[in-house]
Length: 242
Image 1: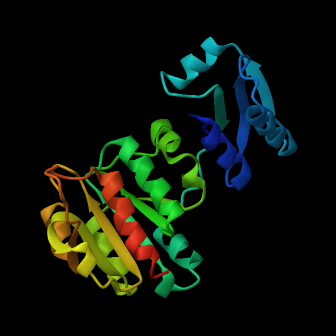
Image 2 (image 1 turned 180 degrees about the vertical axis):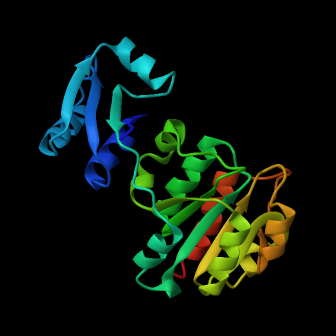
């Protein structure tokens, strides 16, 4: 199976701890002497993962300019998961929050959203095949390994997926600048939150499928929050119902 190069201490640590995919090797810069990196090497060895100490230049080349913190991991991609797989893992739909991206193409925003989702009780993130960032190394570095703790699923068509989840009882909430103010929203679970891009917002057809459009009231004259920050605020409000 093809492998991918991932980087960052948190990312490597979470992948090794989660054990959701096969790790081929852990690469560490010879300049790294910290106790945390030593502990990471011990964790890898205990899991049967090969540990290699390399010249810093080699890590720079493999990370292609990414902030690797002296640590790289070569691993197989996570097992592909379907919508049905994720639904089957939910123990109680009345305590379930899912999220999807609509037009968010920045991997840093994607990583931030995944990290917030994992911290605040969102169990599944859906990434449309089109108009969406992918789970590349930069997104996974920003997520700090959080992608190992939740379900991340690629879907072909967001609007078709919304219809399927409505049939399962999900309430669909679109996050956009023009909508009902968040403090006055009484969320119903299971909830499916759609996050639009900072510029264009939700696509019109996606907006039509939402049960409610939600906005975050702002003060101070800034035009809008970035998608990652906005998502975290909504996830926090939803976490109060979990």
